[in-house]
Amino acid sequence: MKKYFFVVLAIICSYTLHEKFPKAKEVKWDKEDNNFEASFKLNKIANSVVFNNEGEILETEVEINFNELPKKAVNYIIKNYKNQKVKETAKIITAKGNIIYE
Image: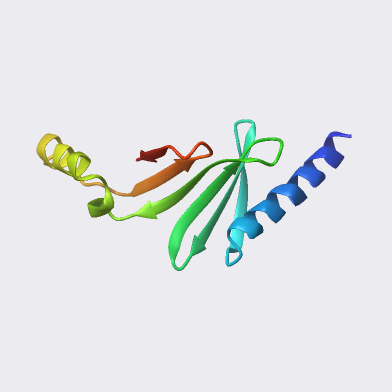
């Protein structure tokens, strides 16, 4: 029964993903805690979508350039982490529409 549940969930998540991101190709699926994450590139930019175990989108994440972070965040990082290199930055949008930067 558990295997059947995962197959149905995979179909639901895949349908939802391609409905929201119809041009997503070469999607890689991973289990993230009790959730599922689909990672893919869209227009050469890394994206991911996290689904709960009911197939609902919890959050979307898109890779952004450092300078696309909010100005206050950029200034804080430059001031407090002068000798550090930022390797990657991302914009996360939760299901409720909240925006988080990392």
